[in-house]
Length: 433
Image 1: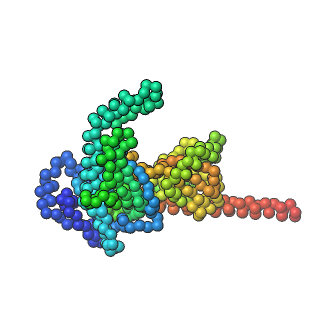
Image 2: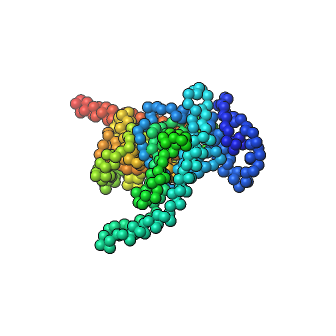
Image 3: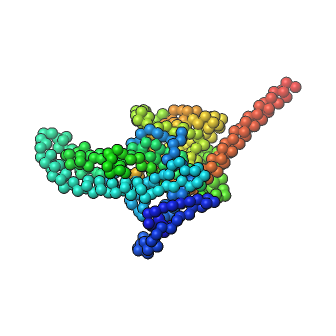
């Protein structure tokens, strides 16, 4: 762990455990660290020990998205800790993955190469951007004086205009939201480029700062940066499998029987087509980033928290119900339709926006539609990334329980139906005799 502070990393996996080779003079560096910083550095060291994680970062799979997805970093939302660069409020870790290694060995993920260069580039740009504040204020004041008093709109606009915020455009060239390492941890990652663009109301003061991030100072071409999206601090260790708790069983049963279904059914003011204004819906779908195909079983509850698969917390409320409760309720009203919907993966999440850097965690905005049991409903919401290592096994256990309950409910309904038919036939036969 101490070796991490020296900036030279060498990780090897033996029997599923990671070992780090000590670096020269690391002990002396550790002694100079202030006591108040030890908890921070210890947590960082735990994260950086994952440089030997059993993963496939940097390899492209069909489940990943290869299109260009554009987002931005606004203001100072990065930090350099130890030898690692974290970009975004959620703590996305910059790594350099070793490609072409033996699949059964640990993949080395270095943090002491591109990461420090990127953080230094951002620091330098931010400093130069802020240094132009006084010059911008003078230029803006002069521009205000040239606006005619008769031009009310421009006059008002110039009055409320403030110093342009620092903004860097991040363009994802490959995104893998569903990558897990072979220790059972969620490890979503992206490959992206970084570019500073001068603000439109900068009066030409920021134009000379326009540049792309390049690890080679002599090159003007952008460097692909690999980022682990908000990785958990202990993603280098195997996930401890816990036995199913009462809460897990209860969540599975609730999902299977559709708790909240009667509430959804009795809500007379629920107009399906009106959950999203049709004009807004068409606009959102038209500018949709990409579509995620899913089934009803991919939405599940852990207590009061609604989740999507093993990755995201769902923020969406319909008539006081979470999206998970609403979907489970609709499924409970039509068990056979729900079974068909599950088999057909009838749920589509049209992703309409992405922000991996400015919120508390990477997030996606979406509009969800379903094509079997409530085809006219369009529900907006937000998916917030949650890399808690316990979510993956919890998702598997809860959805498995919900699926069993749902199948049992369909089987029970079929038996009840057959019993009614048998009773009807018996009554008819008795009348004839």
